[in-house]
Image (cartoon, rainbow, N blue to C red):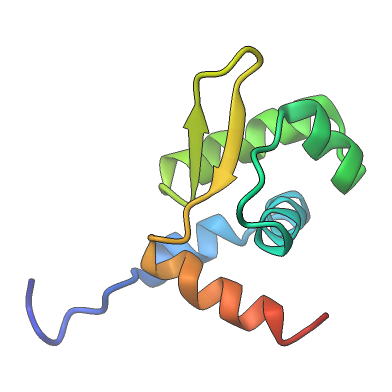
Length: 96
């Protein structure tokens, strides 16, 4: 990696935070970082429609901001090992 190259690409941050739904999902997951969420639990916690939760999870999974676990039903957990998520989590924790 080039020392001048940023750890987190700005395009990824814009894409990842580009919807209210993704912000809500991340906020709920960051508030409970050790919890595994089903899609249904995320729908209830965020007030989003099922189709919106699915669409937003696809984006967050693609960015590696959220991890998917193969339980039945599938569960999702925030990926606090990702540098972008670390920065976003620190930012969100300042606004309780």
